[in-house]
Image (cartoon, rainbow, N blue to C red; front, top):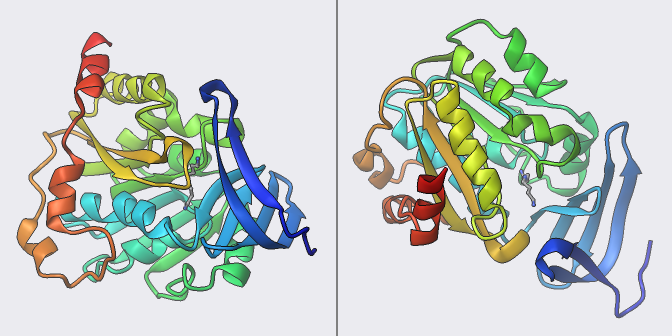
Length: 286
Ligand code: SPD
């Protein structure tokens, strides 16, 4: 699987007239699973790169920002989380961050494609280093079916770490899925999902906010953070609370630094909630 010296991996965003490229050392792996094509590359400067159907999922160098921002703001916002569900997240980077919170009793992860997890275990072992934690359960099936079958009021937090809203992950942005999440959250429960780029995907973010409100979530807040490997280099997670306003985050717990992070801290948490003017206007327009 050796490549020519000048070989690059490029993900093009045709509608936006832009792209990102990584200079490669070599291709390490390629497998067609029942759901998608999984590839792993060794890059020159970003460590290993995981792609699904040609779209960048993560690099060694910058995935910590995304995985921390999908996990810690929500976990430091819920007053006393014990039961967590991760939908998607097959590379296990989010699972690793979530399990840093010692107060959690059970973390269930439901990933559609078992091959993604097997690939991560082989090529991204650091992301999988907590998979053997006795509080972790790994299930391989459709996450939206799992949520529709789950008992009401089961989870304190649902994290949606899916791919882009194309193909099987599209359902994870739908009103039906949010309705099912609302039902299985306990009182005061939170939903936190990856919601794409504020610059490129404002329409989607508008739909997400409307869909969340439409099924009864009391408040939604979008968190902004850099992610240089993703379209536009700027990304979001959207946090929503089932039945009450989103509580102030537990600053003292976050400041105590019992959870080791490379990006997240209380100042980053506060800054991530500041809404750009164009974003406020787009949401207000509806
Ligand atoms: N454009 C890429 C969006 C991918 C979001 N999920 C990545 C999974 C990392 N755990």
